[in-house]
Length: 320
Image (cartoon, rainbow, N blue to C red):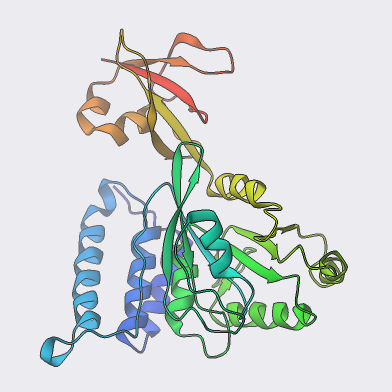
């Protein structure tokens, strides 16, 4: 079976060949693993990538004498998806992540309070989404900050609506992202990430005026105003993060039993009944003949075939 490697994989492979340090090589390998198509034709490549990643992590994690090194960070993905929360210094990242996840965070009115990534879990309806609080995107930011943005499922760019210099800081962040070959529109050699722009400190008396000024810089791109102090926009932000992840929740049931509505199967948008079965167990998928479907769109136990595309909150009963 041909590998059919994606452009994102090939770009990461090129960066790996040009990488000058173990940390940079690790970032590229992890990106290659996250973007490689998952099928039988790439199983050996996946195994090789995992082996090389493990070797480099060990190299970066220890040095002579067994002391730990603290110059490189990687956050393992958990939950239904990973969101990298980033922005300029003192834009309210830690406060927002703490408000959405309950993660204890050091919040202070001076920059670079956050010096290492911190991950918390945001509850959205019946799933958990991982939010990663990162150090500021600034000229002195270490390479692993961009690695976390690059390898997350989606990114949330925080823009400080309480800052009179938000135009300059926004342009500065955009330039640093470009240098790291991270973008949000398709371009050659760029890692494209789904992005939400979030305007923090919307409770500031001049926030709306600054937002209008910002729109002159970025055009009609949407910026969601939020405030940790008043709670403005936080529920809408959760909804938008969920939609940006482009995932589908599927619930399962056994014949004659009620559906399990507590632990959905999480699938990419566009997945099929067969994909849902494979997620549960390869033996279920191998023996699958058809499924019965319940949902709010009018299905009430009707038979659907293996190639039927599932929708969010579908209930499936598998039959062999």
